[in-house]
Length: 208
Image 1 (cartoon, one colour):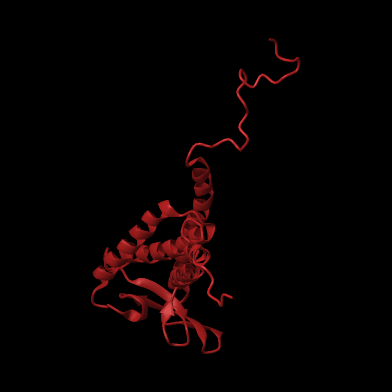
Image 2 (tube, helix red, strand yellow):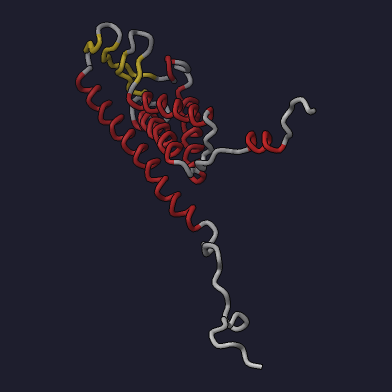
C-alpha cells in the first residue's frame, strides 16, 4: 500500500533539532575572557605609566624639600623617599616588603586566568598596576635592588604621604570589597544558593 502523496517522509529524513545548536564547550567563554582581560591589561599599564611619569616629575620638581600646597593644609605635594610600606612601616625590612609585594603581584597575575567579569578585571588591573609601580621603585631606585626607596609625594594633611600607585591600589581594593559584598563572583556570576534554599523550603504559617 502506497503512502498518500505529500505525506512527510519522517522515517527517511532526519528531523531538524528543535532547540539551538550546541557550541563547543568553552568557546563562548574564551571569547568573552579575551575581551574582559583587555580591561585588566589596560588598567595595569595605564597606572604603571602614570605612576612612573608622576614620580619622575616629583623627583625633579619637588627636590630640596620644596612643598606645593594644593588644598590648604589638607593636600599638598612634598617629596619623600619611603624605605618601608605604607605609613613608613617596616623601614628596617625593605627587602622583606619587596618580597611581600612580589608575592602579592604574582597572586594577582595568577588570578587573571579566572576573571570573567569586566568589573573584577578593572579592579585587579588597578591593584596590579599600583603594585608594579611601587615594585619598580624597589628594584630600580637607590640605594640598591630589593632595597630601593619608593617615591612618595602626595601629602594628605601630614597624616601620610603616598603616590599614584597607592591611589590605584586603594581604589582597586575598594572595588574588590564592593564586588565581594554585592555577591558578584570573579567569573561575573551571582551565586543562587540563597535563592534556591528559600524556594526549596515550605513557607511557614498557620494552616487551617
